[in-house]
Amino acid sequence: MSEAKKLAAEKAIDYVEDGMIVGVGTGSTVAYFIDALAAWKHRIAGAVSSSEQSTARLKSHGIEVIDPNVAGPLQLYVDGADECDPHKRLIKGGGAALTREKIIAEASDKFVCIIDASKQVPVLGKFPLPIEVIPMARSLVARELLRMTGGQPVWREGVVTDNGNWVLDLHNLAITDPVGLERELNQIPGVVSVGLFARRPADVVIVGGEPPKVL
Ligand SMILES: O=C(CO)[C@H](O)[C@H](O)COP(=O)(O)O
Image (tube, rainbow, N blue to C red; front, side, top):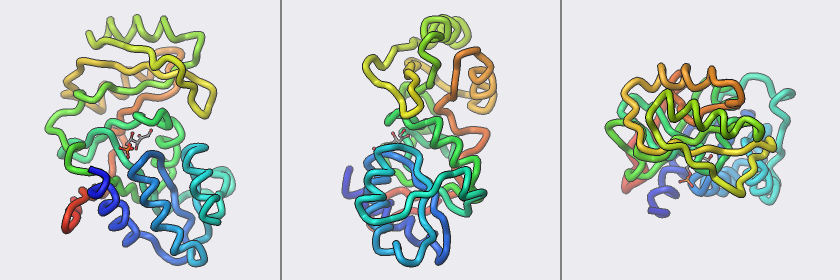
């Protein structure tokens, strides 16, 4: 599927304009986008990055990385996803960068999501839903997740997010009300953020292929 990811990423360059600060997500699909963005490095004003991983790749290409508190509102955010439903609602966080990704998506006018066809689903939830938690709240949040959803929370042991937190992956869900579930899970004390992008879905989805499909 990596060729499809590359094709989707390269198509997303169509949305980059002169002088922009570009919001950049995280993951293997985004890595192709960053590589393609390198050709634009003298035309854009820089990038806001959602992870240490993407920051390192951006810098390796000589693309300036700008603090989101300095950048202000962004015109464009480009990121991948783990699942995408027909309403462009997403599950994200397979790379544990969900909180920073959510912050940048919220700060952006246009969220262009780049995926391969394997990420398209009729109903979200087959991919375990990532939830970033404050470490001391891990077991409380896990109990609440089980009680509220019936899903099976699994600690992604050994993974520490760029914010110093931990990740629970919630298995066995069929998410019929993504906006409601996102709202509900965000209320649990100790939850930093939920990898459901339903309240703020993608605006454009590019599915990699020959040619790429723009939804
Ligand atoms: O949400 C993410 C990282 O937190 C990624 O966008 C998601 O996991 C997709 O990754 P990839 O492009 O490697 O398939």
